Image (cartoon, one colour):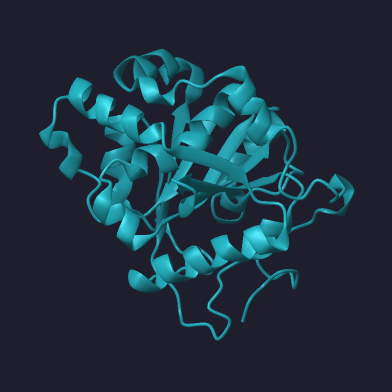
Amino acid sequence: MAQSDSLGSQFNLSPSRFADRVVRLLERVEYRRAESEEDKNAIYRLRYDAYMREGAIEPRASRRFSDPFDEACNVWIVGMFIDGELASSIRLHVAANADAPLPAVTVFPDILESRLRRGQIIIDPTRFVTRLDFSRRFAEMPYLTVRPGWMAGEYFRADFILATIRTEHQGYYRRVFGHEGWSAARDYPTLKKPIACMGLDYFAMRSHVQQRYPFYKSTVTERAELFARSSNPRVAPETQAVTWDSKAAVEA
């Protein structure tokens, strides 16, 4: 998905020095679950700017980028704020059965449906976007933007956390978290560039990742505040049959 232009540049520092920098930035960060239309629209505009910047989507008159999965009952649309300003965003879907809407399943059903039928809990982070001026100032932003996905792994006791990403970003997820390749890149609805699927066994890698990057640790209170309810708490699960062709919330 849309990411910082310098995912690898921060490795000029030792892991401990870099982690210290991220921890200092984290002190200025607040994660907010978007529920109101105002908060969601701010994120949709941020998405549009980020995706247009990298040529991932076609222009839209609304200058907003959303899709039907933003209206699902199991979605968390998260904004990351630095010093009170929206700096980046990520979207999380959580599924524990084959009926729960999961964007990745529409593209990689052969990889994911059998896992969901077995009751495995899967977190699908998508729509990773950053504001250009902030990403230029803070090389640490990619690590903190994906942090809610890591927190969700703990809160929901996830079996796997996905990374549906462009091929050139696979090295980052393999190096930092230990994701493994599950599928080569395929065409992905709404995006112009193919997307690969990677998977992470969360509890197998949790201790290793948090030892190297202690800023991925979180408190019970922090997780509960973010995940106690979804971004669409009034949407009943039985109404959810989400596809990319659904008419709800699609911006032309």
